[in-house]
Length: 171
Image: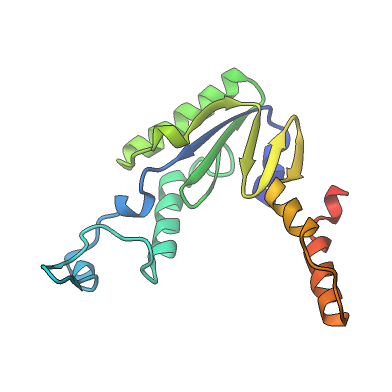
């Protein structure tokens, strides 16, 4: 929630997404051997980190912290490979974007252009909509509450209150 609240003052946003995020991390030879697989035709090993390894999320998170650490929370907010660069105006946003792109380039990471957007006034990030200084729950989160079945006992009422309690700040 802290990342979202830090975006509330901004008016322009650029969203960046890495291309095949985990696969951009090379594996050591020892780690590669642990990813061996067999098919009817051949055997193989991954030489880049595939999605689904038990330590993949932690390792990817460490990579992104290492790459973005000097500017993380200042010029960019990220969740795994999804990044948001913000600014109060074009000049500030472009300055911030330049710093982020430089860090991505230094780390030799690759972006997926079709999943990136530049200078948006409204964005969807972590299931929320951010626009004009406001943070609202996204349609999927609202739909989950709307479609929640009518509670039939005390346990179900508590579950519903837990679900809706998070959204008190938006009412």
